[in-house]
Length: 274
Image (cartoon, rainbow, N blue to C red; front, side, top):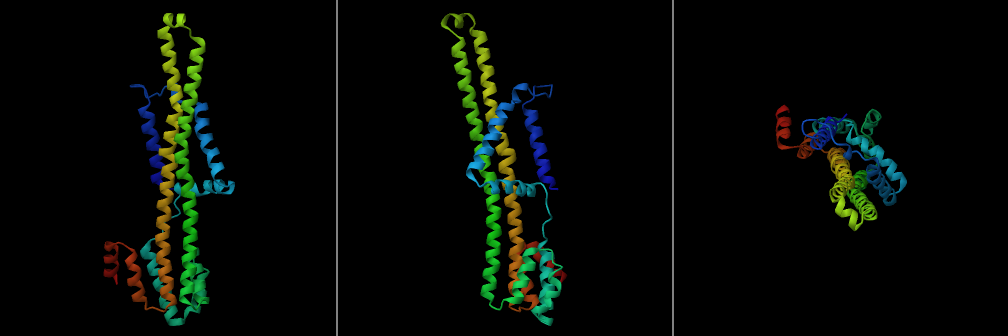
């Protein structure tokens, strides 16, 4: 479970709830709760998403969105570097084919697949192209999921504005139909009160659109991008390590090369332990 995402959502909703509550009561007016307005914004956003993307992509979006709430656990770069250094030492002493004995026990799919190809492929350029293509394919899949949420973040405010315009049109039309020149002079105060109340209800859809976009859709897209960048960084370390193992570099040289992927402080601590 990703605590930051949960805390952010709860804290954001609390602040919005507090902001729209009446002073001293902590009770928001009923005006803020409008099922028809929510249906226009949320339903319209989903409908536009279905129009824009294939159905399988939209269904896949639901699975991808779980990554914003559940963190499978990031790979520690130093742990991965040590892991690769062990493989490099084994490959130098016993040869690349000896790594077949440990491949099945590797949890990381990219590392497992990369080592398998390193054993079978003699051309280092072909191996590098294979690893690069696999990495790019993963980045494209992640980017597609992020793009859907970013677009939903742009659809929601637009449908919120649409709902507001619809509400204003209906309100003005109804007001014009029930008012006349004589009755307006007699009930101007009541008419203005009804007009303002109707305008408040109409603006609720804009409120829903802005809230969903800026507290849910866009932040989820940002969290997915952060997750993707973190995974890509780990896979770049793995790719560099596999290529070093394949070229039979000395484990110490490979380790120094992989340490360039971590920050300066972590690098300093790692070198002190050697």
